[in-house]
Structures are given as C-alpha cells and as structure tokens.
Image 1 (cartoon, rainbow, N blue to C red):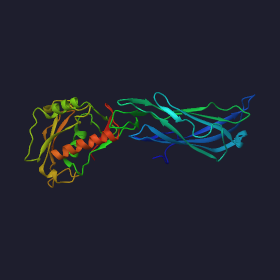
Image 2 (tube, one colour):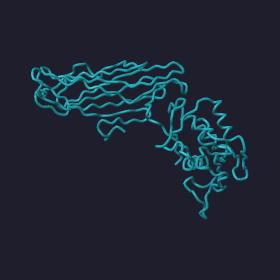
Image 3 (tube, rainbow, N blue to C red):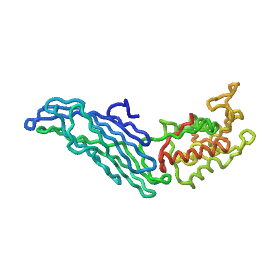
Image 4 (cartoon, rainbow, N blue to C red):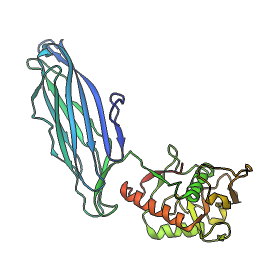
Length: 332
C-alpha cells in the first residue's frame, strides 16, 4: 500500500496510514536575508492501528536527498509529535532533538501514541507534527507543520476498545458462493433501487445499533403483506435491503418495496449466471419498484438470510463501525 504512491498524499485503509513528502529547506544570511544554501529532504511516515488496542507505534524517517551552499555539511533536525483531546504522544520524538542530518543520510525512529477509552467512550483526533531544520550561522525556514488523517478510538463496538482511520470507509462483502440468493438480492437492489444504496463510491449505508429500532425496520419491510413461497424457495424467509440494522432500513412499508423471488434454478446456478438456458431472467419481480422506491424484500432461504446477518455482525465488530458509521456493500 505504501510503495509508489504520489508524493504528499496519505494512503489509508481502515487500520493503516502512510505517506511521503518532499520538503525544500532554504538557509539565509543572518544580516541580508539572502539565500546562502538549500537542501531537499523527504519525510516518510507509516502507522498501524488495531481493532482491539488503543496504543500504536508509528515509524518515521527523514532523509536528506541533496544539499548545496552552507548546507552541504548538514542540518540539525528536531521532529516532535503531539496529540489533542484524549490522545497522548507517549513517545513524542523519533530521534534525539537536534540530531545532525547529512546529505545522503537517513534518520529512522518511532513515535508512540495512546488514547484509552472507558466503556462507551469515543474520541476523534489527528496527531500533529513539527519538523524544525536548522543550519548553524544562518536563518532557516519556519518549522514544517502537518497532521495525519482523522483517526478515532472508541469503546462502543465489541468487547475491546480499538482505533480506526475515520475516512477509510470499509466494505461489507456478501459471500456470493455460499449465499447466492441473498447476494443476488443485494446486488439487484443496489442496481435497481433509487439512490443505489451502499454501492461503493455512491451513498454508503449507516449502521443502526439500536436493536429495538432494527426490529421496527424489519417489521416495516417484512411484516405487512409478506407471504413465503416454500414451493419455490425452501425455508423461504424475507431478507430486506437496505438491511434492518442500518439508518436506511425500514424506509418504506413492505407493500411499497420492490419484492424479488428467485426461480427455482437460482438455488443451484452459480451467482454469476443472470439468465437461464432460454435467456429468461432467473428471478421474478413480485412487485416492481417505482422510480422512487428505496427498499427491497427478497425471498431467501433461511440459512442464507441468517448467514448474511451473522457475517454482517462480525464485519461491524471487526471494522469497528459505531452507531451511524458508514460502510459500503459489495455482492459481486
């Protein structure tokens, strides 16, 4: 993830961030302010968070790529990390302040952070950094100042507190091999419902943690007017999309939602197959959606319905998705 990406752009996933950035330092005459030398340095950072820990270590490097004038002998370098809110930089310097950096040399060290959370706690923050370079006997540039992307530590998901990169929105992937009917229903809903809910790059779904409201959402979509078809779908059950455990769930009464029922052959065909041998669709619309329809209910074998629900619950915990937290859905 951290190799070959553009200069100055953070690369992030749910639990990691890294970047490199070039910096030009200019030394100036103390009396006249005229430039008397310069150097180009490269900053590199790489941090790793965890879903079950609120401490983390970051690897920091500083390399002098080139220098001229009075700077050819090197620079004094002081790198300091800080944190706001409940976060603390427990090891704020990756190397001794004032360490000498010469052309072609690389300084490497670590900074360490901690953001403990009491049960139910949550904290949004971004560690910040200051790099001061100095060529003795001259005036240098003001210290460089920057920060990481927004991070979050919380104790609201699962049994342990943990931390994530806030802007890295995770993707729940429905298993189309073991749950072909359920996955097909998700994909159909994403392609055909207004707003294409949950499609990566569009509008994400948002977790709903309140179990009572989840039940209300489920009853809204799968209660009134639902009739299982056990001849077509053995152990038929109602699977709703968007999921009941999302803020987008329960958006319309069930009779107003699109309703999808697979042909019998869908239960044995690979997920990728969209039509039967005669070219006919492998799923029937019991109730076609209007242009503004925002929900679907799908006839799904009960085991596939419960498997997808269980997978989703484990995904929410593993990715530390707090109440109202966003995520994408893929059923490819």
